Structure formats: C-alpha cells, structure tokens
Length: 283
Length: 283
Image (cartoon, rainbow over all chains, first blue to last red; front, top):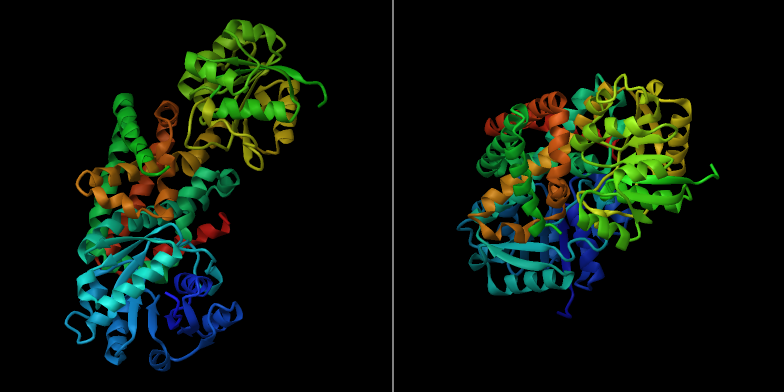
C-alpha cells in the first residue's frame, strides 16, 4: 500500500480527528480534506493540523478518493445515501457505533458496493477536534459488517488501512454487531451516566461527597462525561438491543439488592464469585 | 517524626501489604511484624519482604507500639475488642471501608482511646500480598472518624503518618462516613459486579462477545474482579446506606429505560447533560 490517497474526513471530532492523525502518521494519505458542520470545529481542525483544508461536502466528494464518515449515527443515515448518490470510483466508509440502520439507509442503492460499514472499537469520553489523539485505534478490534455487500477493491483498501493502523479485523453481520456492542459498549455508557446522576443528585444535599471519591469511582463514572450528541442517537438506533441489556442489568442489580436486604451472605458471595470470572477476559 | 516504631500489620493483603511498603519507604517503621491467618499469605508476605517477620497476634501485640488492622470488616469487629483488651500504651488503627459497626464494637471499652478509626480511599481490584504496590495511598484522601473518642497522642501519630505518606485528611463522624462511601465507593463495586454478570450471562450464548470489548467496557467492569471476602462484609455492614443508593441507582437506570423506550430524545439528552456535570469533579 504505497500509493497514498486523497481522503475526506466528514466530521473532524474525536473519532474523525484521531483517524486523520493516523492516516497521516501511517502514510496512507496524500491529502486530508475536512468536512465539518461546526465553524468552530472546522477552525480547530485546521489549527491542530488534523486536516490540510476544510471544504464543503460536495467539493470534498469530487476531490477525494476515499470518504470517511465520522459523524453521529443519526447524521450518518441522512448523509450516506446523499454521498453514495454522488460517488463513482470513490470508496466510502463509516466508523459509527450502530450498523443496522446505516446499512438499511443505502440498501439497494446503485452505488452500495462503494460503501464499507466499519466500527473500530475505540473512543474516549471526550469530544471535538481537541479530543483527537495520536496512536488511537492501535491494538483494538475493528468490526467489518456485511462484507459481501461491498465491492472487493473497497474492502481491500479498508482492510489494509486498518491493518496498517494496527487493528484486528472481526467480521460480523450488522444485526450481530448491534447486539454485541449493546453488551460491551452501549450498556457501559448507560451505567456510567446513571451512576453519575445517582451521585450528583445526592451531592445537592451532601456537598462533601466528592472530597473522598477514589480511583474506583472514577473508573466506573468516567464515561459519564461522554457527549450526548453522539450517544443519544446510538441508544435510539440500537433501541431494542439496548433495552434488552438494560432490563437484564436492572435484574442483576435487583438480585444484589435482594441478597443484601436479606443479609444472604452465601448468595451474595456466589454473585460476586460469578462476576470475578470477568478476569478471564479483562486482564 | 524521626523515631521509628515497631509496627504490627494484622492482615498482610492488598491494603496491609501496601501499607507495610509505605511505612518502610517513609521511614516510619523500625520493624514490621505481620499477623496473617492464611499460611500461604504469611509465606508470601515474607517472600516479597512486605514484613520482617510473622508472629501470632498475641505476641505481635506485646512487641508492637503500633497495631494496624487491615482485615475484612467482619473480622475487624471480632478482633478489635480482643486487641483493645490487651493493649496499654500501644496505638491501634484500622483501615476498613465501613466505620459504624467497628466503632460500636469497642464503644465504652476502657482502652477505646488507644484506637483510631481511619479509612484511606485507595484500593485496587486485586487481593493478597502479591497485590501490594509501592506508592499506594499517595495523593488520596483518608477519612478519620470520631476523632474526639481517641487519645490525643494516638491521633497525632496517625495523622503525621498519613501526612508523611502523602494523604489528605478529612474528618467525618462514622455515620456520615458510611453514607458517603456508599455513594463514592460501594455502589461502584455493585454496578461493576452486576455489569460483569449481565455480560457473562450473555456470553454463554454468544462466545464472540469479548473479542470486541473496548477500553470503556474495561473501565466500567474492572472492579468486578474485586475479592468477595472483602466486599460481602462491607455490603452487609453498610446495608441500609447501600440499599438506599442501589434503589436510587435502579431508579436512574429505569429513567433511561423509559426514555429510550419512548424514543424521548429531549429527556434523554437532558439526562446525559446532567451526567456530564461529573466533569466538575472527575478531571
């Protein structure tokens, strides 16, 4: 992969900005074009040298060989069909956290083959161009969805690009993807938001409460800083799966509540020993 | 504080072991005596040079000037009165995560003044002597409870010791302590255990689920590796507060469930914006 490409990044925030840094770092881009709805973010993206120039979407599509969508998932379902309307040879890929709706938005589109659906499993609780970080994505998994619906050359470029960034490719159909990420990503954000609200509510009466917050608390609550503009559309697009996991999670919490209430030491011990098995997975 | 003390550490695990390392590092101890119910842990504590020797409790009490209790909170309420029965000049302190029950266990004891109730806000999800780490506790808060019930010389030594380790001292009565830690520590462990169980249950059917686990998931679930022998007694001793917080937390999760279910974008946005306010506290 020694021929660098002209690449347009649509949405130069946390994800798009970090991707831009990697595309440059790994010598994958000959030029990076930013497309950005927020004037402030556009300015910052240039100031931090995430992209070489900012262009309107239409013009970026014409100039670019590769178009990377990194906008909230509700914007994706609107933009992707419009972009596919205008491409011919270009490769279009997205990086969003839900897959069924965005893939459905271009089902049967004459240029469907130019689009590759991906989801790199990386992010932080921060947002905007200033949140972009060097070395992002490396060592993590990236999910490629519904591979057979994309053209072979498009898949090939996207795969090589992710491999060069140091990502591990996992294939999944969109339905399985949306189910799995509800468990290993979306629910973590909801528990963190809810935990922050639980404690912030209490703080209104007990202002000293955060003097003593420890690293354990910080760890479980840090995702609560995440951007609502990104996460509300994710929860709504993945509604059925998220509701299923949330129902299960509330049932698990209710078990803890019952056993603590009954001072049932043995069952409490068993619940925690079960939870300890997570150390098979998380080192 | 240039006169080093002979210090007995009762329970040489994560907390006691890390404390032993700091007492040596900060030149606070002339000798470190370990008291350890588990033969395996006793052996490891010597092998890792956490303590100079292992002695039975009775003998350690006789030799030591300072006695540090670092055992599960259910063991503390049994040991502390027995230890106070035998001390005269010695200072006794504990490091446990609950305070009302342990303080009640020695209420009116003729040697109550020799005991100082403390809770350093530090820990990890690992346990045993091999989990002891250098530099633990530094930069964190330590809570001193019911200061007026302890002798002045005992308070003075304990305060200077924690300051030398680099901790910030916060005063609280036992009741306020137990309420506050339910919010900023105990609930985080329960949400993490429950989240691990939610996902592990699903994994029985979907074995691929953890291939794609990301850093956000790891962050919210890492406390689920914590030791049941330590945490079951904490939840049971702090039952009323823990149940209150758990009830509130389930109510917060239920709000998310309702708004997602109703596709109520505006209220969902508001819930997450509220949660974002945690960035006032957690940088």
